[in-house]
Length: 430
Image 1: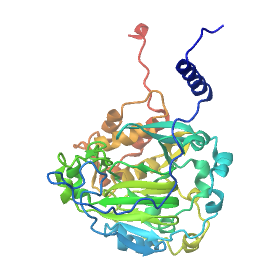
Image 2: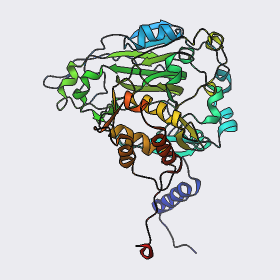
Image 3: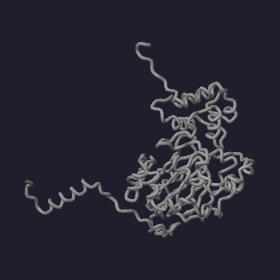
Image 4: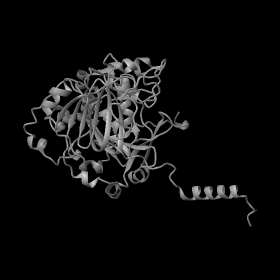
């Protein structure tokens, strides 16, 4: 027999029993309204002595300088390069995708659960303030809980899903069709906001469902946001500032920072040249995908005439593209299973992007990601030393890469293929 309990104790016991036995969701379903927020925001003057936009989201500190350039429909590869990539101009491409089969198939989560639910994806969990952590879970688990949780899917596209996502026609031929880094998938139930960040690669972001608002800032203003590079010579990074509550007493230069804006809805795509700072807010059930591709100082579209039919094909998918990185069985790895000398040389050229050298830190970041699947592997700095041995400098140029001997390339390829694992000698062997 249980001892006698007063009314309050009885209610507490009932609550604890229900809470611990049902694994109930703590949060309420998120607001799916896509039009509840005005963008760019209307700015009201702050009270005397308080800077405009203090402890408000980014965008409330200074009025937008206006929309970025806009165009209708996806441009040809040649025009895409001349008007936007070469000119280093962001552009919003309206109605890039007017009608896609997945608009019906992906309209709710049931199809995704049934066909792709067992796939592992990378999910970001937003904690207090600006703290984010990344977790791997099945797509089905994410879809069951993301409406209630502070989760958003930010993952390389699993290989099994590539055939259902369109291959942007602007990238199907020409130089950049051979410089594709990876495709990423984004999904949330709305109400998410990103850090202010940048990429070392060009970025083509296309919205399939929902609404996304972009704040876009020239990289020359990155010091106004205490910007941190991913690693030395990365050309990419993020601001650690809380973009939902900007401290204008501490970061007063933000009020002098010009910014432009863009709003994407279903079928729209946004091109962001490498280096541009951007912050993203999403509303409603949102699904989008990104294609990242390496910058280049040259452009050759001579193969476009031969591929004209492929460029115009309405049903060409990301499965038809060849990327540097792939996502298989929940693992982010190189697209090619086996490293060969010609593949290695090409990857090194892509790693250089539009710069003139590859520095140690860039190679180390790339190598560590490429051999992460091996429990033990050679130190990246040691591999880079083998690549630069005898050159007289601690970096690689295009000419250096072209002149790498076959024997050296084969030796480095072997390290990529087996991790270059070294076994320590036992005491008996010493």
